[in-house]
Image 1 (spheres, rainbow, N blue to C red):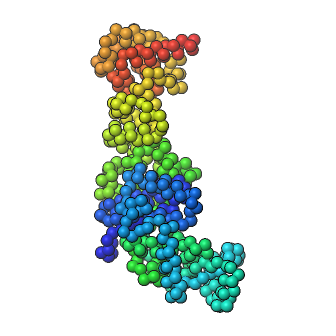
Image 2 (image 1 turned 180 degrees about the vertical axis):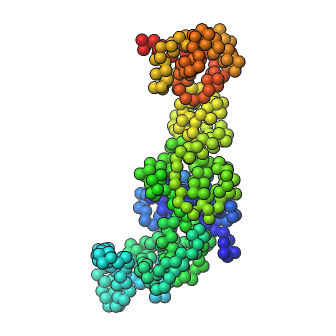
Image 3 (image 1 turned 90 degrees about the vertical axis):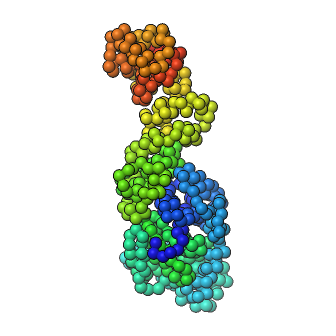
Length: 484
Ligand code: GLU
């Protein structure tokens, strides 16, 4: 920071639908920065464009943030000294500051209609000139203004933009210069009375004493407007940090087209918050170093905003999967179980104690929570379904012979659930059936687990009781019998 102001950052989403992972990443950068620097993290909701029926999107954002492990020091639900933290509850403030600007001759009412503005815009485009407001209402004589008022036209309020250049000293990009000329007078209050984003954001950031504005690069072009407003209102300028965007594998902005844009989607696919936050902070280089899988505390320590935002980050689901698998192995079984139960109804009926016992047995074999389902069933259900691959193995000629030998070896075994007992039984089956290697192990795996991938056979033996093992072999043999 260039000054000694208290460090205060904010995340200010406009909740208009699903919670986009790019937006989650911006929240995460703000949060990591605040926690690293010991500053305050504010959550402000930009909802002036929302209809009442869209209010529940705010809940989606809050819920999503909590899930991914982001907490906030000030916000709509927790309050704080500089609230309210929802823009729709701050309308008088925008009115008040817009009046300051109009009273000082720095803003003026604009009566142009949408159609008039569109027509001028099209003319400018046709002439090959970058479109901007013509300044028509700036010079409107008082009598004309009064006439439009009596006609009932509701004006918007426009800010007067002068000449010269405006410099943004960006924390990530360094100095970036904009030409004021190209901006044109812009709307600060719409004709509906609602503030425009460019205005509300300045009033809010200034009054909430935000010291560093961290947001995505697409807002860099808005920043000269913000700087002009800060200066016109006599507010202290914050610092700005515009981070690069998150892209899809085809290097275009990550969107629904890529099938992975929403936090909810990734959550439903079985990613855990520890891994997703780690991935979003890591992709693009924000965590530096050689260690990739980090706990939340390690992430806070390692986070470097300058590195995090410099280059465009390409979302790679295979890498996220890998990171998820790594985190799943680190997490205590209670937490894995909690996340897994959260994913679906009905699971709550399962035996919790048993699930906690078998999660460590299967965790090395999964990359996402979704894959856990089939593997846990191996240990929690008596009857298991055979996958297509398992059925194919069971249909092979020798499978019946192997499984009949297995049943015979299991019958007299007192407790097959040990490493030694397992090795002994397999040996007996090998001798009795005359098969070894894949021909021996594949039918056993298919019959006992119903899956051709999953935990090692030894683990399956060691975590199932004798009656279940026998029951499974019988079912597999019955299946084989129906295939003849
Ligand atoms: N509501 C804006 C957005 O979601 C916030 C931009 C900003 O951080 O200033 O893009």
